[in-house]
Each structure stands twice: as C-alpha cells, then as structure tokens.
Image 1 (cartoon, rainbow, N blue to C red):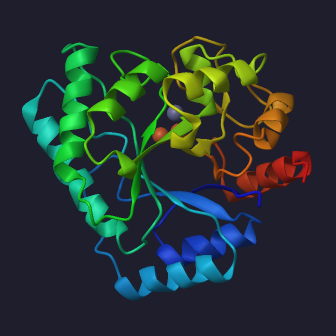
Image 2 (cartoon, helix red, strand yellow):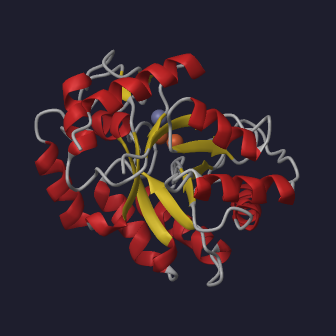
Image 3 (tube, rainbow, N blue to C red):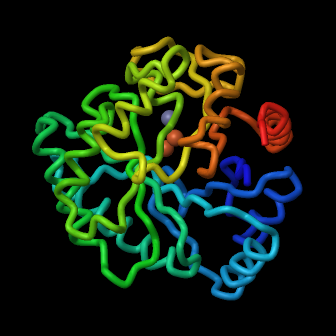
Length: 277
Ligand code: FE
Ligand code: FE
Ligand code: ZN
C-alpha cells in the first residue's frame, strides 16, 4: 500500500481530517496536536476521536502522524522553556491515546549554547520522564536541517538520543527530505548511500515515516525552507526514486509543502503517478 497524505488542520475536528484526506485521495495525514505557535490545546472530544479511529480502519488508512508544536524546546538553556516542552509533550501523549498506535513526531530541539552533548542529554531526560510503558504511541525524532544550534542535523545525534532513552521500543525516526538535503545528505544523487548510512548509524527498523518536501536550498545549506514537489533542489525525479525505494515504500509519506488543499491534492496525484506497484 502506498500511504501518502499531507499536513492538515484539526480545526474542524479529528474525523473531518480523515474525510478531507480521503477526498484528496490520501490514506494518511499529519496534524498539529495544538496551535503550533502557542500552547493552547482544544479538549479532545472522545466521540470524534473514536469516529476517526473507525474511519481510518474502515478506509484502509496507514498510521497517521501527530506533530508537536515546533516552538517547544526540550533542550533550551532556559529551564522554564524546557519544563514547558515537557508538560506539552506529556499532555500530548495522554491525548494521543485517543488515537492508539499512531505516531507523535517532534523536533528534538536547539541547545541554545549548551552544546550538542548537553542538549542530547536533556532531550533524552525529557523522553525518559514522559514515556510510559502502557503508551501505544511511537514517538518520532525528526531529522533536522542542522541550522543554528539545532540537534538532529546528523544521524549520529539522533542515535545518541535513542541510546539514552530507556523505553526504546516507544521511539522511532521521521526522515524529512528537505531537512536531510539541507543537512548535507545527498538523497538526489546517492539515495542508496544515504539510506545505508542511516541503517549503519540508526537502523532502518527505526524509520517510521517520511516528510516529503522539496527544498528551496541546495545540499548542505542548513536552512530548512520547504518547496513544492519539483520546485526545489531535490526535484521530481528524485522523489520518484524515494517513494519507490524498497526501504521506504511501505512507510507513510506526508507532504509539508507550501500549499492549500488543492495544491496538496495535485501533489498527491503527481506522486501516485510516479509510484510503481
Ligand atoms: Fe517538523
Ligand atoms: Fe518535517
Ligand atoms: Zn522543515
């Protein structure tokens, strides 16, 4: 099964996201657990959540991805900022149990001067505090572009976080194509080499989802500006190889390109056209 979808807004409710995705010929999607810039989370409507669970099952959807607000920073030098990240993520994981067995993706964070090693330790401490054995959600570390003091611009940094997490079965990785390009991994000319490296450092069994975005910037730019598929430095041909690669093809692919719903629907159609069954 080719599970492709896009980022969607949860503002009309959770079931509505499933219906919107289906209308776009998608069979997965991603959504923010709360306002990405703020902290306010709408209360979960358990009936709406249950209706989405049924809808996803009846319509052959793959796993869906919740995305933590991108403003939280579990490895900030500021203690209150770290505490806020911890509370937000802990609350999100409780909420995610209304949608059991799916993914919760987050940006590992920026060490803001503490150094990568200290940052990695703080991220792992946060995960060790919030992860509970009974949770069914798999928490995903997103590969980052490595801009500023961002952690996760190298596979080694993600490995170092995973190595420190006690409930390691609850952890995975989400590969963002724009971010790895900007971090210097050449998925255009050497996709096999990059995936071999991912396997050597992290293990391909950890890879659970792909953010499928073109990049406005060239290889190694450390920028993180997403482009529409085919309108950036990665290019349509490379995306054809990515969605068909044996190590990736069964994972959920989520578009985070600068688009409205009609643009996402066109990109989904484009990528479905490139898929070899
Ligand atoms: Fe992200
Ligand atoms: Fe992403
Ligand atoms: Zn990004």
